[in-house]
Length: 400
Image 1 (cartoon, rainbow, N blue to C red):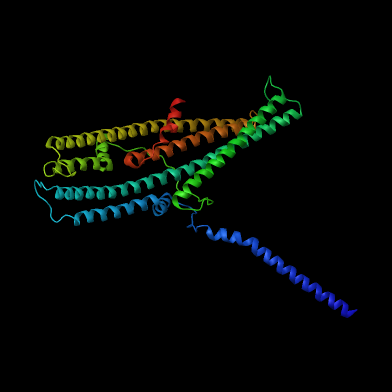
Image 2: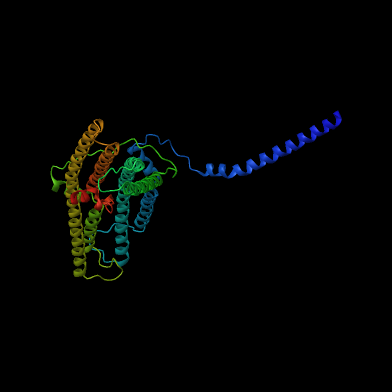
């Protein structure tokens, strides 16, 4: 009997070891994809308390557009240096030799292209900075919008609960409406609030997705942004001075002016720069065309700068109105809470006033974010994306 029991024990241990081995292999097989997925996830720097300046630094480091612009500077310099090596001497005065004229024109054109690529790199850098600010503030807005939607959902839930309680005792909270009608209306309002929360969650996730991709974070990360949106009025003592400053720094204006200089310089010394004879009158017309292009570019940039200034000022006026709306909502909430303490108001009514206050605060936040971006756009209009700024909260506030 002891031998039989010993054999059975050994058999049971062998089966247990085999089962353990099978389980270990199974766990290893099923765990390997997860491990592979984790190792394929790019390592991200710590993002707790991510400031705007830190986000800008990460975006500049991660930007493919900036890397491409840097390579373009290197590429155009190589072409410029090669074009210079093909010219044995720098001609002075009228040349008259087609081959030399073409080589000299190529040197000047390639040098202009190289200088333009350097300015284009600066423009790309400015665009990354402005776009980072915009996406950073979009995340802050989306997070706040979700909070507002959740507050509205809580208010709608409280109203629905009160309506159902009143229906149970056969009491109507609103004259001329049956308890059933109130419950149906409250259910519809709560369903709408739930949908608004879901939409706000999607909006927050989308804002984070765009922001994370822009600065090189993993898409599932939710960094806590430490800088808030601050409203600071645009300080401009002399608008025309600011317009002149923008014209001096604008890459578009610089290119147009340099084209005029090059056309004017080549007018009297190159006759065969294109490989064929170019009459003197045609060369003078080319200079005039370049001058007209430069004048048109200056008018457009100046007009856009002034328009940005006045739009920003209008937004500041609308923001002042939004602050008054917040004060009014705060006062209404204070009064409603006092009424609740003496039994003259319900918690649902207090929740409704809290919802109005949250909405007023979000409107002010949205205006502050748009205003901050438009201030940056005013200083560097060549780098701004104003496709969404045109439908800013200022317009809706003005309509209200």
